[in-house]
Image 1 (cartoon, rainbow, N blue to C red):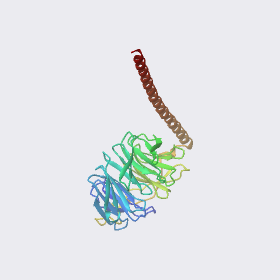
Image 2: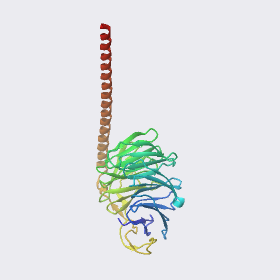
Image 3: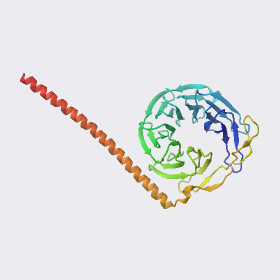
Image 4: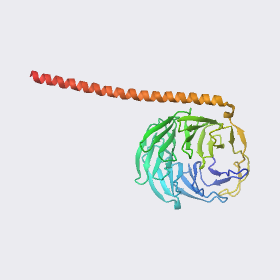
Length: 367
């Protein structure tokens, strides 16, 4: 990891900005809602706020005592929430980077923290295998979701703010209703760790990125896997939809950033991929001009998925849906049997209690 921040223009042949300032690997980055600021968090325990321009000016603040894993702006752009290996979540004002408060009930590294769309709630995920929901005003944890069997790498709010989705090292994706605090959907579509996920702005789709090197598009209305996307030559580490939902970008350990067109009615046969080559950089922060490997060049390439026929995809999707349905029914049956066993045990205890009471009554009458 090279500790720099790269910002590409989506216009063809435009040069990229390469910002230097962090002293160690950059692990998270996000644009503010207005697009006028970029926040980044690093293994150097700091958060930087950048102005995405040629000069690349930034302000830095020592945010945590451990690696900063997550940064996220509130929808009004006034607040920033950060999450760290120091097991805390912290909330800051964007103006002057004033520290507001800290949330600290997790007992292991905090991987991710997000504001709700209305800014009233914060959700966090941790290596303690929990997802926690916080009230921003009272600063209290109002619920903990403990269904995951592994570290919870990523969590985010649905655009409606009514539910959340989380991805875990147990290879599953789970969705909960935050009003009723109940599990809504459970997906086991990946064969390895789920590293990242993102809701489509419509709220109807979810894209996930996994260490199995694939991206998956989930249809949340029908509760099924829609597409499996191949392209990364190693773990896919992050993924996010654009604000309008027309594109989504993914990054991987293969050092590639891929930009995909969102067209749910067509096969994903084309991917726009930044190609590596050296050129001078506009806006290298701190060192003037230098060599770079990130000038963007739009090139259409065929992914491995384009080899598949549409019929094969439909068959695989149908089989996956059938298996998922069977697994769901088995879960329901298991829960039903468990409930029946509990009721049977209670009935046996009651019966035993009645017999003992009856024996005592007979003994008292005999005496």
